[in-house]
Every structure is written in structure tokens, then in C-alpha cells.
Image 1 (tube, rainbow, N blue to C red):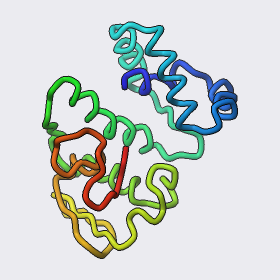
Image 2: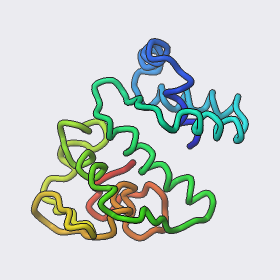
Image 3: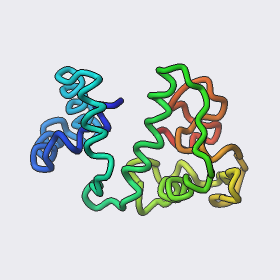
Length: 165
């Protein structure tokens, strides 16, 4: 997962664009790049790259600044899961409001959340945050970005199949 998070700092935009064409899609290109980085970097080197770029204002082309935050919020659960840390405390749950808004806005994340997936579903979080109307699913704000309802699997879909980060 760390190799995925450092990909934007280790692969140029032109090289990644060629990889998208070669691998026929962003997901496959990202997997190939992350796999290549994971095979060539030690864990300490990956941490160093993350630390060196902690203040970066990078974001994917045509995506808002909240996109990298969303990526980190979604994938940090996978990292914590591997470390057997089942809970995360983001402190003030309103810190996740931009992530939740981004993931539920069909204009900003159609490739992350299929447009029909949230139809007829109301999502509620512990910070007076809600999305849409319909059958309600509620929970801690820190759970929604990872699409987990019960904490037994990272990146598993919630009952509403809302997100699969």
C-alpha cells in the first residue's frame, strides 16, 4: 500500500499516461507502478519518500486537492489492518467531512464510486453529516471512507455497497 501512495512522487505524469494506455486503464497502470515500486524499494525507503513529500500540494490532474487526502484516508485502513490496528482515531471527525463529500459527489469521483451505487441510499456519519435520502446506513465517519460496516475486512463494501476504496 505504501508503494501505491508514493507512486505520484516516483512516476512522472507522461510515464504514467503511457502506462495507462499500455495497461488499458488507470487501475491496472497504478497496480503495475505500485508493484514495480514495491519490488525495488525497501520499507524504509518508502517511508522516506512519504516523509519527503508530506507537504506536497500534488493532486491528480483534473482532480481536487482533496483527492490525495481521500486516497490516504481510504488506504491507511489497509495499512493499519496489516499492523493489526483495528481502530483509528482521527480526533475531530469533521476532519473527514471533505473526504465524505468528495466520495459522494458524482462529479468528482465517478471512477471511484459508480454513479448508481448510492441511488436510494442515505449515508449518515457521527458529525451531523449525511448524503441523500433512502435506506439509511449510519456509522462513524472514520468507517465510511473505507466502506467497512463491521470492521472485519479492510476495503469490504458496506451493506449499501456504497464505496470500495
